[in-house]
Amino acid sequence: MSPPSALPALSDVDREQPRCPPEIADNESADGELAEPATICLPYRPESVGIARRFVAAKLREWGLDDLVDDAVVIVSELATNAVETCCRTRMFVGVRRPTDRTLRILVGDGSRSMPVMVQAGPDATSGRGLAMVHRLTHGRWGVTPLPFGKVVHADLATPTPTSR
Image 1 (cartoon, rainbow, N blue to C red):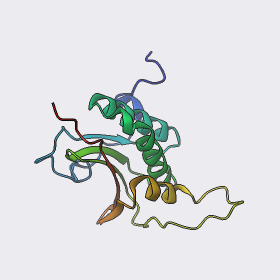
Image 2 (cartoon, rainbow, N blue to C red):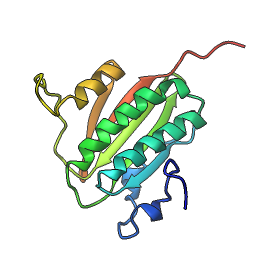
Image 3 (spheres, rainbow, N blue to C red):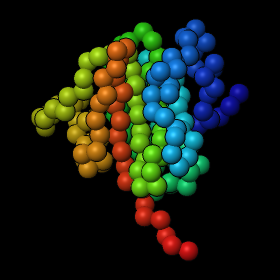
Image 4 (spheres, rainbow, N blue to C red):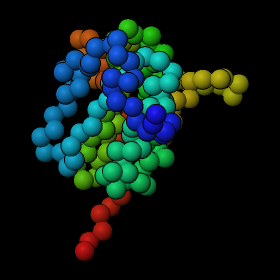
């Protein structure tokens, strides 16, 4: 048995669910990207949020972007939680991209056409702060792409300035 922090293979996550449709997993082209895009499809279950966090953290460490792990984990956690709460019956996907040397893009796609809304949560509210945190961490660089079968929410983080050699 693998340790709790290990990423499960897709077949271990949920054998009864089909794989993500190619149009979801390949939503963004790898052409011109700095690193091979990474995508994982997950069932709509609360435990998928933890898997999404570990997946993104592992990919960022692999790419040498350790300084972005904390913010990226908060972002993917909020976006994946929102996707889980849509209660769709298909799979959601989580993707990580490096479209440029200055940008890390986190994507979460789900089967709901309901658009996320940033609300002003009151001091006693027990929820409603997630998109505001995403907005703050990305300096407003996030958005939604509606699709015929759902949507993709993306959030961009600026990568550290490369050092000259």
